[in-house]
Length: 166
Image (tube, rainbow, N blue to C red; front, side):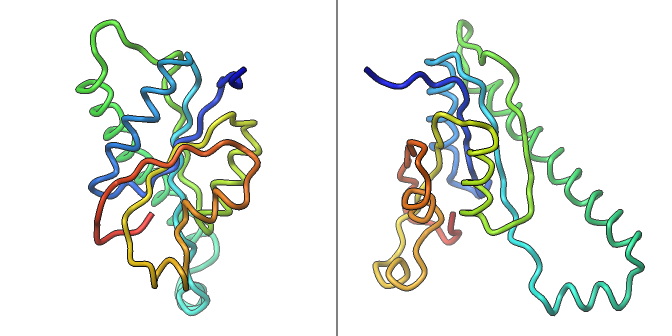
């Protein structure tokens, strides 16, 4: 018997070409009447960038800037998701609930796995871009890292060649 899917985590880098993975996530959410959580993980600043910000901005100002940036990013993602749903869902189709949208700062693979665990997600859906064998050997992809470090089923959607990585 297949597991019940109540909560689905869709992880995306929101780059061009990621629409097929989102389409698959929405299709699975509709099919299973599952809640869908859209997650975009943003790589944290490196140490030098953090030191530069701390040297020139008061701590409160820096926190306010970070919060405003995350809220703006979330608003843009929300608009893109709503536009997608308006154009892609047919008249009889509907999500069980509006998608939750989360924009979090952290290494993408770890952020996806932690979020899926916290949400008690039943399925993770994400895209995988075609990249060279050498780059996968040395760096791996976010999808590959998630697949190897989670106990939650992962649905990987091939996205084809792209300049951006997942």
